[in-house]
Amino acid sequence: MNEASRRQAAGTQQHFAERFGAHPDGVWTAPGRVNLIGEHTDYNEGFVLPFAIPHHASVAVRRTDTGTLRVAGRQDVAGHGAVEVDLARLVAEDGRGAAAGLPGWARYVAGVFWSLGREAGEPGDLRAGYEIVLDSSVPIGAGLSSSAAIECAVGVAVNDLAGLGHTGEELVLICQRAENEFVGAPTGILDQSASLLSEAGHALFLDCRSRQSRVVPLALAEAGLEILVIDTKVSHAHESGGYGQLRSACETGAQMLGVAALRDVAVADLMAAEAELPGQIFSRVKHIVTENQRVLDSVDLLGSDGFDPAALGGLLTASHASMRDDFGNSCPEMDLAVDSAIAAGAFGARMTGGGFGGSAIALVKKGDADAVRDAVVRAFAEAGHAAPDVFSVLPSPGARRQA
Ligand code: GAF
Image (cartoon, rainbow, N blue to C red):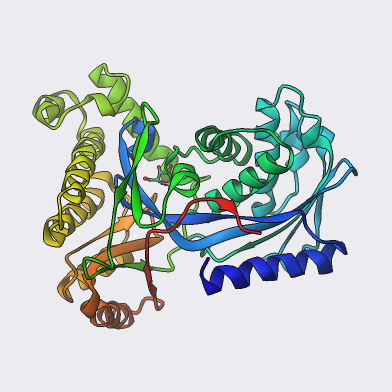
């Protein structure tokens, strides 16, 4: 545990004592993520290669016998006080009504209880009563999975305290269902998998069809490399708008091509697909098909001794161009972040996450990080955009009990 994590866990614990007048049973954490490569491929049953970042959600939790879920947040929720939800109502099949009026962050917490209730044979332990204080260092709306981090921290905590015995892979699906069916964001399994299954020093190679995953070494420091996150401060949310439309376009493309999912289309099939599909649907399909191949190529590269950063950077930049030109989910600030990072010496850069804003990542030589950061900040100022946040991330551990 690094110093910042230790401070966050201690702060969450202390806030719990002040808020609820008791000690929590424990503190659990779950990280945000960046996706190294493989964007929008998850719900097309393809491949992704994310890694967990040091920024994480933490929850201090105590089991009670009040029959009530009481949740308080440490930040961004000042003034809301503790939110209270009747657990017998929430854990029932139609428990989604119990979320009416809850602030956004609390819906992720309540959604996990609801979703766990769909799994448990006898959800008695889930109905017992829980007090939770939530804190998070994952920037909200920055495309770094702040919502999945909350879901996964609550998921591992309640799984432990209620003795439910779910595996990490099962919790991925439970937390995804909370997000899809309770919160209403039609997302895939990328974010929850990264948060729950990642290991320090590694990326997570996940086949979203079989849901088999394996970790791939990503020894950045040893290779003299850094990955910079460039948070453009253009905020996004997947409950509404563009994300769902892109997902529908992919489903239409798969249907028209007569395949179960775009995973089943190979790069060599693209020429024939172009003749069959309307222009915009073809563009969406082309991104997914080529992106799956870029993930496989990236995994091959990382598997070789002393991987070539220029080759990996080339794949990252090609991925960004594919989103910008074919998938249509970039924005001017993001393109500027990518272009200015590359112009300042990055090996490659791309938007990470669902898009329409959020963050880019840039692969840089350690000694070049400051110059790249300064160049991006300068380019944003010259273009009249709000200043981006630029920081370095290392592949970090997945969700776990911290105290
Ligand atoms: C968001 C979603 F939550 C993920 O499931 C994934 O589709 C990603 O956008 C795009 O790759 O983070």
